[in-house]
Amino acid sequence: MLLRRFYDDKLAQASYMVGCQATGEALVVDPHRDSDLYLQAAEAEEMEIRYVTETHIHADYLSGARQLARRTGATLLLSGHGGDDWSYTYAEDDGARLVFDGDRIEMGKVRIDVLHTPGHTPEHLSFMITDGAATDEPMGVLTGDFVFVGDVGRPDLLERAAGVAGTMEAGARVLYRSLERFRNLPPHLQILPGHGAGSACGKALGSVPSSTLGYELIANWAFQCATEDEFVAKVLEDQPEPPAYFAHMKRLNRDGPPLLDGLPSPRRLAPEGLPALLDTGAVVVDTRDPARYAAGHVPGTWNIPLTRSFPNWVGSLVPFGTPVHLIADGEAQVREAVRDLVFIGYDAVPGWLGPDALEVWAARRGGLSTIPVVDWDAAERARRTEGALLLDVRRSAEWREAHPPGAAHIHLGHLPARLEEVPRDRPVLVSCRTGHRSAIAASLLAAAGHPDVRNVEGGIVDRVRRGLEVVSGS
Image (tube, rainbow, N blue to C red; front, side, top):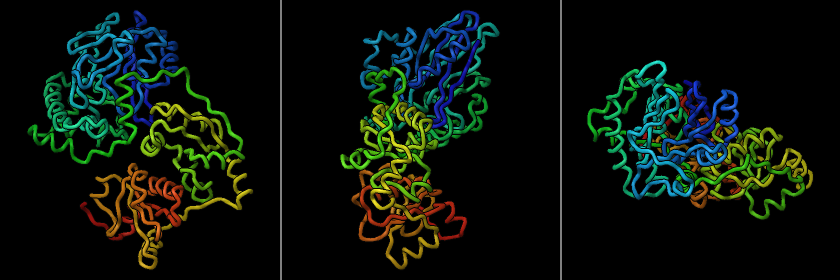
């Protein structure tokens, strides 16, 4: 048997290839939109991709299952569960085969049994794998967003991201019953989840790539709840705010993800064209690190650094469907950014500009804009002497745990819709956990024309380290 795991760090997302080496057949589970990755892997392993499937209708990335099936001629397998309210609408048009709880996929001696594991979503499937050449006992389960290492999939996304009212608590109760069924499987089973630490599909995902059911039964908080009501309360508590793009992913993945013929290649734009581009209201994302952006940037641009969280913050802050222009140091960074963007459905990347665009701007406009970076001593002095507002842009759960007294709170992902709440008649000091998210927020406020924005270096971590006062609660 062949089992390969593919992991995208920025999405914290795992996909898998399962195959029978004797027959050369393979199944790909939960592929993203870079189909070439799976085609190259299949070629290297001398396998033919016969089946493509996914565990559920994803919220955090645009599925590549439909696309990979088209490119390979493989049979597309989709969940037949979910009912009238939440089922794949494109399955019949694409000739997909619906699979249900108890169905089996066979490739030589490799067996994959379909388990319906609803709760995170109504249609969610898990896939139990048996290497029949070795034993009739199953070796593991591809659990998707059902069971993670140390956590379980959140049941609130249909309501909080996709707007399907009244599904949050009901989904939590269904998830509890799925877990009760799951705990009776053999404890030796490998747990091979669809996400790791950093994913917004749960609240406490572990960084370890796999586990066993036996270990999760003693270490995963979800299996420690004594009653259904206790589980429901805990699973809905302190879930992270879903990025805005999640709602669009849900809809597109349900109705038919757009197909890509390779990743886009945006053209390099002439540096002299940047002013006209900004004058049209175009979104121009400067992907440089926050320190360089703060030291000198073109006014009107946004700073979303090309780090692990790049797709999350683009998807949270840039309205879905809006073309994204990039400022980057070179073509390698542009290729990385484009791949990140198309994974979350931002296919329109018309062009990019290099550092020479900043040089041209500075020469013609008398310099670049800056964002002051201050420590807590300077921040507290500005609050006392200038009446500065301290704005915390962390998640709500982080805010409730500890925040500076007298601070205001707006989650970074909600800031574009709440810019008018930020006063312009006094300085604004932006803080987060370490200074990364606050740098993004400061760039948004500056681009929106706020006259005096400063980023607090080190965030709440540095404030606590210094022994400065913090309070808890809402």
